[in-house]
Length: 363
Image (cartoon, rainbow, N blue to C red; front, side):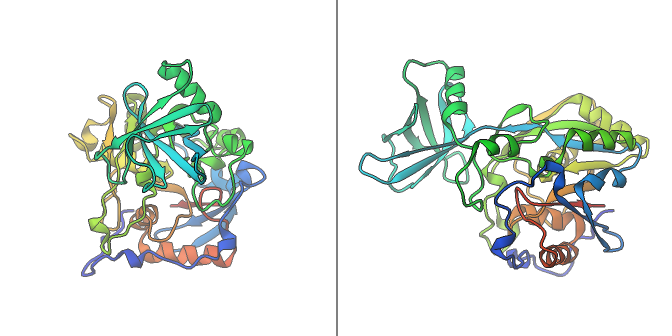
């Protein structure tokens, strides 16, 4: 059901906060992907249920369509040390032409244009401040001894790059993260963060969902820093999202149209899937054009309370940081008060939070 927009109230970023003990921030994945807990949030009644992720198939209906984000995380973090001492980090954000990338670099004040950094097998030439993004990305060129082939560079990045774990995971990445910080259906390389709602799926859970009469469809949205960039403006309406590339194939659009026509619901697996779907729904021709041709492009859609959802009926998601665009999105979908009540309940029951944490299904 659509959430009624806030009336007679000026939206404030401070309205989207909650208290979270640091011990509840998951530092490692669960023992099994589907061993996570699952909170069920009923929008109409406000009722909360506490289940396990393996119970998900009980909450789908015949004809429902779960839409997955099949983006694949690549080891985008390059690290090294200055010759004078001290560490640096280059986070590859978006591949441009040839060996050029947009990247975030730390410490930014020490890394000026013209600087060359040695990161394992790669040499990173800082070319310029890009001026194309909203997050301070720089234009860099990658080089590797004996390789001018961009595909060869990609292989070296895969070999020597680090998994771009979020900063609230306060440990180095491991070989386990190369597997677990990736959905089992990841296919299209390009993300610097996992679509974490999908991390809980196993082949067994997916098969049980199919046996319950629901189906799966896929889209791609390459998760970038814009998804996680904090909202610093006092009024969320003043926040600008960074753009992320998305693509929804005609087959997925056709299946959504058919599911809707036959009475099924569209269940978005993750906030990134929501943003791609709602971008498509708001495009030229709207819902009436769905299925006629593929949809692709760059989306900077920022969803916060007041947004009218046109395509997504239910949402599977993880628990998100205070004052984040992700928390605002789920608040738009279910109502801010209900979501904050659910988060307080999750804290009281010691749910695990954030990327490697537990899940929530909003009905």
